[in-house]
Image (cartoon, rainbow, N blue to C red):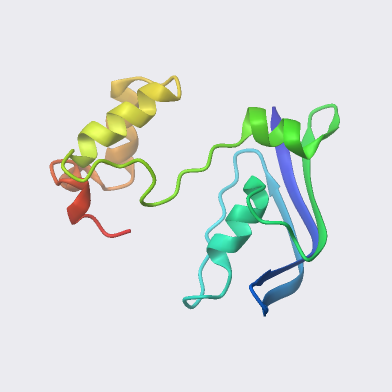
Length: 135
């Protein structure tokens, strides 16, 4: 199990345009990260690099378990899930249908899906078709 994700002096670019450099991150199990910034700042590219879809220009990405460092490919294959905002959502299904499906797919239960939606204040949106939701 991954207990920490680290980046050190990470540099990413999109095409010929540098996005950022010298980016350091320490994200521990149970913590959340909120990426904010203008359009094109590199938020999605950073997530894609962590998932292994984009090669960094410089720097390192490391995944640590309780007993030390994981090989990046092993960590990505066994401990990461990429959920993009438009990935795999059926536009005519409701948010509730998609939430319950995703929760059960990852081993959870319907009740936990509804509890999470309630805790995040999303219950009023569950009846909407996913195409009506903001990305």
